[in-house]
Image (cartoon, rainbow, N blue to C red; front, side, top):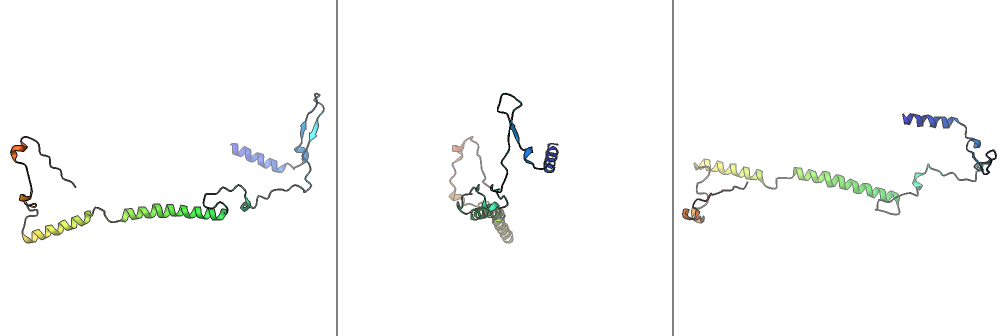
Length: 158
């Protein structure tokens, strides 16, 4: 609603002719309220320069992005290039390489190698896993007397 009211005021201001007596302010300088002086703006004789806002390239309020402090176009170009490189190459390409890179743990290679070994052992008529996979003479276990009633916890790392 406020936008409609402000729009209505703008349209009324366009209709009212711009005359100097509409912009005059009455200033009272005496104690009597009947006397007053008019303070009107001086007439424009063409000596006043009206700023040309149609040339934004000549703006004096330019703040540099930090790439070039003297050339506005070069500063903005370098800012856009650096943002493009950070977003496109940094995030998109790094994410693509991370998601589509081969497994670093070689899990698929381990599975293929295990199937090959199982197939070879089946061809030779051996058990899938040898009960003495590690030579028992190389394993140093304490005797049962030293272990006693303690629980034995076996941990498998995957």
